[in-house]
Image 1 (cartoon, rainbow, N blue to C red):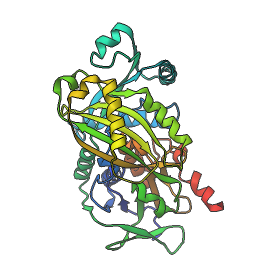
Image 2 (image 1 turned 60 degrees about the vertical axis):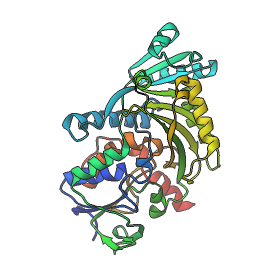
Image 3 (image 1 turned 90 degrees about the vertical axis):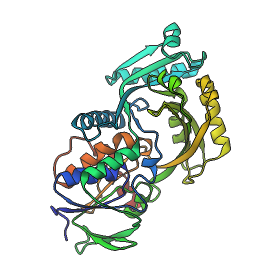
Image 4 (image 1 turned 120 degrees about the horizontal axis):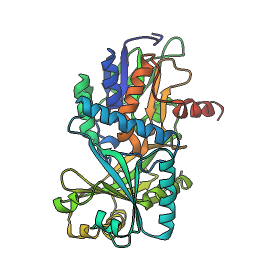
Length: 390
């Protein structure tokens, strides 16, 4: 097979990106096989905070793409595909000391410069808006037009709507080259080879080895906690409460890349169940366990920010390992030198926000259609070209 124009596709990975790719490909009439090493949303998509958000983005391709991702969620909610699954709400970013106020003010100016809907709240207005937060909070910036979605629910809805059966417990071991050398003929799996005309690799952390870019995509862990229900306290928060430290942790981790460094941010997220999700850490490790020191630090910070949380019990702690790239931008597009091989990975904490949008873009590029999304900043060739001369 030369892979050009064929109507059969193998999608590797049944997280939110793979499930969305399968859905949009099936909508275009492709015969899709969705292969998953464990179960749908078994990895990062099932251990995510669910933020459909642009609040923490810097101006540039990720902000532009996140805005398009939020718009698509709203569209799919209106059309019924995500009915009942997407909750519109703001993100509220807060600063507690002078350096945080300065950092948050600069970030808000950048967001406003990109046309974001913001509201600056301080003084008595802040106390009325967030009556339960610490009196040490000096500034709040409300970022409007955001939302929340639970990753595994979105994955389940996309797979059901696609009509594609997930081939679970099937590990992809490698790619089988076609006769021309410019195409992939099959994926070798633990259940035998699977042939197709086109191949989409959306396997998160397992993608790098398959496409020959080991070291480009690295694991990054986040630890989280969930409280018992507290309906009145939950209802008093207009949206996710994000400490300015979350922004600083994103900046700091770049300087610690390749180490075992741990950076703490803080998000207190009021879930629709009446509970709170509290996160999290940014750690350069593939270890999936929780540890007491990190959880204690995280919960202590949450209680200082929102003191009434001290009355609640924590009923669950967990961690998720996300895939991050060396330059902080995901890999989306056709692999250089392979006419029928496409990749979509490296989204780190943005997979829930971007998953449906990326799946839509994958459906279009596999079909040979122009994409509404500018994929150039995410082109896999920016690393593949370096690896050829390494």
